[in-house]
Image (cartoon, rainbow, N blue to C red; front, side, top):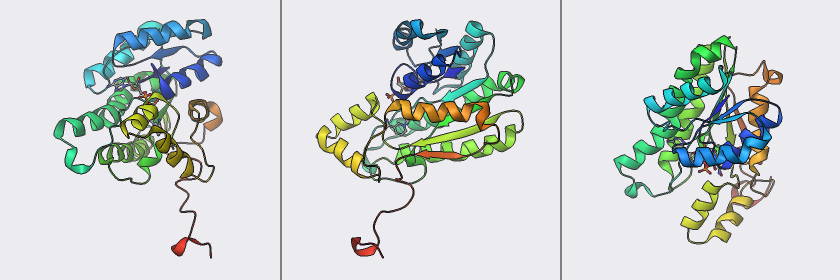
Length: 253
Ligand SMILES: NC(=O)c1ccc[n+]([C@@H]2O[C@H](COP(=O)([O-])OP(=O)(O)OC[C@H]3O[C@@H](n4cnc5c(N)ncnc54)[C@H](O)[C@@H]3O)[C@@H](O)[C@H]2O)c1
């Protein structure tokens, strides 16, 4: 299997979850250094190989798949996880920032799937795209990320229809996860403690997820247990996309 953006955070936790079940895991990340040091840290947990490449480019997507095939001879599960998330108000977005968000998240997931398709079809495999709760609803000051993640949710649906019945394609839509990305956003906000408190408070379960909790859902969707599931956007967000907690005026009716 191949996980993009797996040198740290959710991708790394997902690699661990699959290794624990005996899968051969190709760890992609943009640069060789982080991919190789993640692999060195995972070596004792199972069959793992580095597949560094920039999945924001079509060439990079093909390289990541080719390295997976070189290492394991097959590819049955693809997890499109790589992303960037830079929060800025609309006036501060330029073309480069917009392209970087859309290219890593949306273009990357599409062309990695295209490159992996012959192998996925041969194994009747599965794709899991890591979207976000911000693919299901919007938020201020993060328009490019929201657009890219909304795109992934519908890319998933369209691919699920086109690739059925050979390959299942699903997305997960996590709420806040305690990863290096979230820690970086917290620091950039200027008040990391308030940032964490705010994110923990805005779902009804009142906390940020651990990466291993999202990894379990990815594992389920990729597994034969989910054999009848394709095209879904699976929210793992503590209820934040279920609706608003209070009615008009702040009380329940
Ligand atoms: N952390 C959260 O709160 C949260 C919430 C919802 C969804 N997500 C999604 O979960 C996924 C993982 O996020 P995370 O929090 O672990 O982030 P992270 O930044 O900790 O890890 C992302 C990894 O992707 C890699 N990457 C970025 N651009 C790449 C490229 N062009 N090619 C290859 N690799 C690239 C990064 O180097 C990094 O190692 C992302 O899709 C993110 O949008 C995260």
